[in-house]
Image (cartoon, helix red, strand yellow):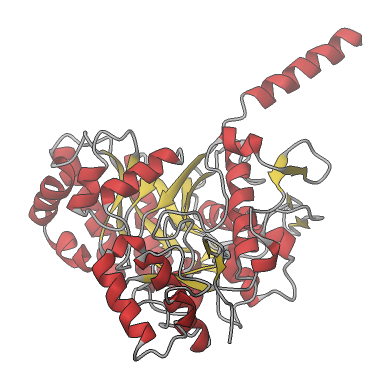
Length: 465
């Protein structure tokens, strides 16, 4: 009996040792007018240990900057090109030559998302999706680029049912026209389904019944699926398995999945329950830990969790509620919105707590100053250049009515005597006087909102008037 016990123990250790870690990437969106230049962004990615990135187009400056960086890239064909791509392979031949062949293999293009969340596009381009994917794949084969996968990122709203996970199903009106043909193409080409999954949306809409700890990967009692008795310790995994169940219901249980977008906003409007820096830090920090420590979901335990966080930067020109402009991990000046590590070494060095009595370690919460939670400030974007900062400073202190007395020579906030420091004080004064309203911290891209208290020398910026 002793030898059998030791044998079982060794086998158990072997299973643990070979639990494959998932992959972490980040979405590099650029709906903003105040972001660093692509070479600076690539340097930031490398400094943070981020070696996978997803973009929403095939921008030449971005793909050129990513060349020889050892960063794997997912690119996209925008939705507006799908009808042309579906109509004629000569279009996709030309597109592949101009947007893929031109950069590959120096730029490690790993996959193409043909469209993004096509089913919810108001321009109704769903009927073009699978023909466009088929033609893009044919063009890749034609130019000896068969190693590049094709897929299309779908929103979780493509599901008719997502709870319980075992009852996951696609919307009936999508199944025959697009879901089945797309999954068939993915199977044929050895590709995977791209899915954008946001537990934040589910929590925000159902905060009265969904535990915040469950949504943030924190310690919680878990949720048992009444359909198959599987126990879920996080909302994201339950949502992922709802998609797997929906595919299995259509006899496509062999298709892999990559979460191509997920994140949590560090700031939101008053009615956006759960938005905030502390929750964003917890969600993303705990998710990175969950992915990098290995293992799949309850329904697919042997599959890795491969995830792209949304997003690299706060994007100040995105429409919609405040949260839409505050999913970034970094401010435009490349400072972290909150502290999250992107490598296993960083995760292991992080402050941690046990979850559910197991030895799995997750960060307790992100590095957010407690006194600053719920407060916001407006600061200068030094990347905008002194001319733009000075113009914004002049406006804020003049027509804008900001209180600029503390930055006059000899006053309490004159030092440090720099345009950026003075502009930050003036911009913040204007922003606070305007009640921190939407659009009051922009100044033509010369400013942005932060959720951690900024200081310039010994001068602290006020939080209200």
